View 1 (cartoon, helix red, strand yellow):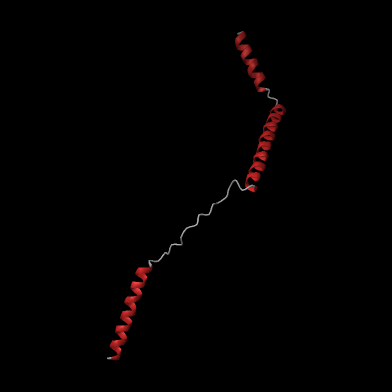
View 2: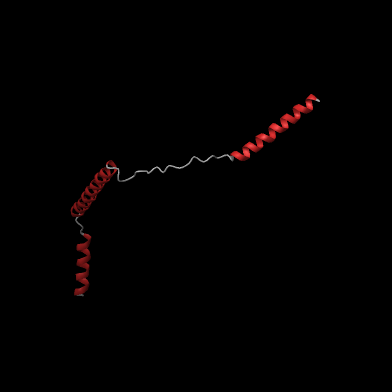
Length: 92
């Protein structure tokens, strides 16, 4: 009976939560996290200003043509030949 009574008392004391104490803990945690976030942001800004982070290295390369030039010249030549042949046929 005594153990049961003690367990009920302990449950009752657990139910009496001090909200002010919890808010203070949450506030302290928030302040610490916010402080580290600010420090990290200043450090990151420092790295960016010194060009150590987020810099793109441009690698020079040849400009590749999207068209196959040899094939294009061959096609133009065939059209020119057809145009010449049609002109010759018109003259006859």
